[in-house]
Length: 97
Image (tube, rainbow, N blue to C red; front, side, top):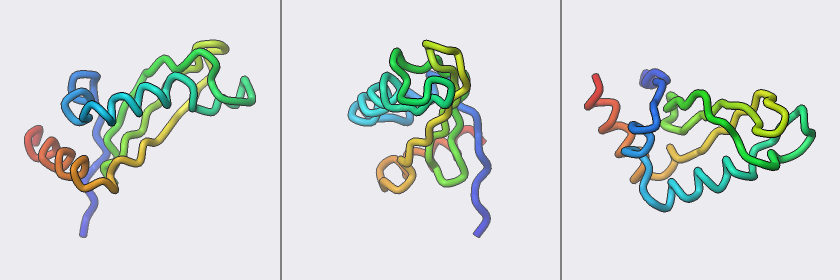
């Protein structure tokens, strides 16, 4: 079975895909739970998000910059294994095609 393509998302589309609990988790992780190579640890002041992608596995790939050193960071949110999110993602894919 062919996997769906990775697609870029904007903040509005992300808000549609995430429920309230997922939004809280997403924001908490980006605030303090992303590794920055330049700082050699977790981001101290969060991440400035520059790109969000819905991956071929219906996970979220977020790229951005550490707010302290401006170094490049990335984080994958493995939401695709949750049936409710997976179903919303597949519906979203269908709606935008």
